[in-house]
Length: 117
Length: 116
Image (cartoon, rainbow over all chains, first blue to last red; front, side, top):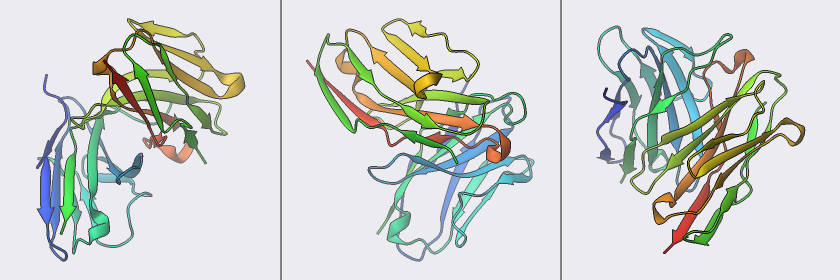
């Protein structure tokens, strides 16, 4: 049973370029979460998605960042016009269900290390 | 608002020593969940344990044990007879209900180094 898949594992972009990070959840999981880990810091929540819906994007920067989880295919975190401060590890997690009276464990992918030159 | 504090930034021990990683949390919700994750040098995040607020029983899994105390809002993690392979960053995380949806709040992490 494959775990959460993320690609690429490492991504280098120059300032002003776009970065696209992909996440395929575990089989049977319909909930995806993105977190960012800045150097020397813990993980910070960015966005929570279900298929075709953004449930909570309270942790997303207001500009340049967007996320989607289409009906078919992986979830995408898109960063437009990257700046050096976007350099970080971006982790995706998935769970079968979240919220309400029951909370499922989030299982994390290996992360994408983004370096902005 | 939720908050998780891991006061120990770095811990260094010699193999076979016991080590305890502290985690203190803050939440106003009466229903919440606590987690520990391990991040080895390879960088991935590995789930270790989850505990809900209604279950204060301590848990043991091999050399790992967890002590959950609601009275002090703590969820500490002890590794008995540490090994070099335990070297990693350990994160404590909190999920609380209400409008938190699926959001986990992480502590800053504790870097554990186990020397041979």
